Amino acid sequence: MLRAQKAKVVEDLHAVFSDTAVVVVTHYQGLTVAEATELRRRIRESGGRFRVVKNRLTKRALAGTPYEGIADLFSGPTAIAWADDPVAAPKAVCDFAKKNEKLKVVGGALGETVLDAEAVKALAALPSLDELRAKLIALIQTPASRLVGVLQAPGGQLARVLAARGEQG
Image (cartoon, rainbow, N blue to C red; front, side, top):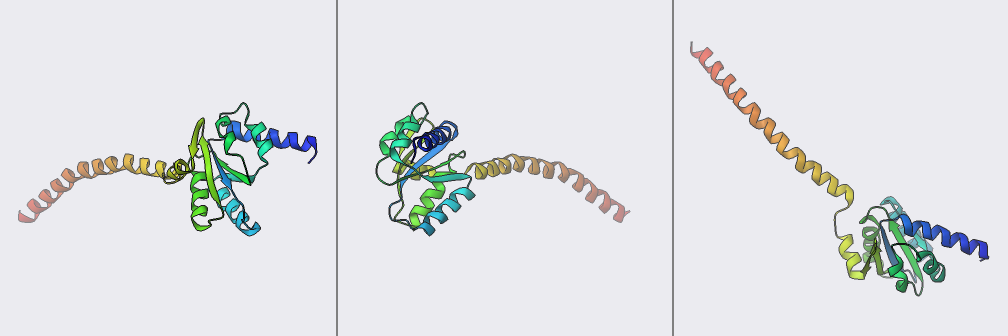
C-alpha cells in the first residue's frame, strides 16, 4: 500500500471514530468471504458498517478521538463494526457471533467508555432506539385512549337512560 493510500485510510478511519456513537472490535479469523458478506449485510441493514482494518493504521486513526482507549484491542486479524445507534452494531455482531463461532467479539467503546466483550454483549441485549421509541409512544398513547373512553362513557349511559325512558312512555 502506498503512503498516500495509507494516509487516506487513516483519514477515513479518523472521521469514523470522530462521528460514530459505538465501535465494536472483533477478530474474524476463519470467516469465509460469504460469511463476511452476510455479516456486512446484516450490519448494514441495522444502520451500521463493518470493515476489516490494519492495526497500525487504526491505532494512528484513533489518536485525538473519543475512542483512543480501545487502541490496545487492535492485535491479530481485526475488524470493526460501528453505528450511530448505540445498540445496532453490537446487536448485529453479537447475533452473528452466536451462530458463527469464528467471529469473536474482543471489546469496543461507547463514546469514551471502553467496553469489554461482556459489556458489548450486554449492550446488544438492550432494545434498539426504534424499539424504545415505539414503547414510549405506546406509553404516551395509552392514557389518552383511556381518557377518551372515560369521557365517552357518561354520554353513552345518558343516551341509554333517555332511550329507556322513551320506550316506557
